[in-house]
Length: 339
Ligand code: NDP
Ligand code: PYC
Image 1: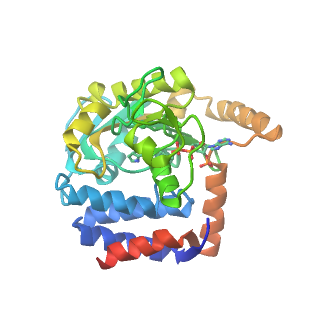
Image 2 (image 1 turned 120 degrees about the vertical axis):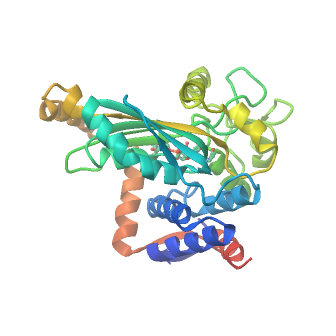
């Protein structure tokens, strides 16, 4: 990062709250969003921390989101927790439905949350880590906008479609990963564009279908999936599980719904939770030890587990009580706050 600015964690949250409130979000939504942005910035997640305030602001400007929407939990007598975000942002709906997801997972061994009709801009790891923090394993998936070409294709059909997973570890940070199924998240490409940096090869094609390293041409053309046809198939699975399965929009449909208005995509989200106490037939500690043996075998050879960089950033930033962000980002956010 070039020139940076230090912000305490309280300043990160206060800046978020002031921009969100000024943009038109009601207190409950503003608090849920500010909490997640602060959590992400504390872990040095640059693409989905404070930077995402621009997307929240643009979402409000699009005129489609309800900044005061009250999420509604739908009654069910099975293991599905369905929550209608009512055209609000996703995070408050997740907050409201989380206790019931935990209760149903403990009762059934496995349960799922389906969030419908939400605007979605955030990283997924804070959600799966809420579940691993209470001893459950969890996965989350979400579509976005059809910016991503399928393997072998030339135009966007798929979203950047992140997949997140978290596994609880006794007395340790969980095993967590969370990544877009596109080679780069859209937010990462936006950061390259802001910094005037070229993308690596293999991330995008321009609108004529030619490989490009120009972030602007990539955003006007199509992004590529990671891992060729493997990432492409995973991305299609996410479209299906977090779209038609839960009666919500695909990335193609979400893009059509937006009609070029900008801001966060509008669609659903699925979160699956598993209770190791029930799956492992009363042998949780034996099975935990087997998982730990696997993690040790990986790290003993010098490989790192996903999220280790993030956990190190969390420990460092929490200990020193501040984060560092690019000065250009801070200037633009202050301009938004004072707008
Ligand atoms: P990254 O490529 O930055 O990281 C993906 C994961 O891989 C992280 O868990 C990371 O851990 C881990 N990792 C990175 N390098 C290594 C390594 N060398 N060895 C082992 N693990 C490694 O993620 P993306 O840019 O693809 O996604 C960023 C965020 O964007 C995600 O949180 C995602 O949820 C969000 N997103 C949200 C969307 C939405 O629609 N809401 C759409 C797309 C993305 P670590 O963090 O420790 O480096
Ligand atoms: O970074 O791809 C992304 C993204 C899409 C919606 C929110 N973030």
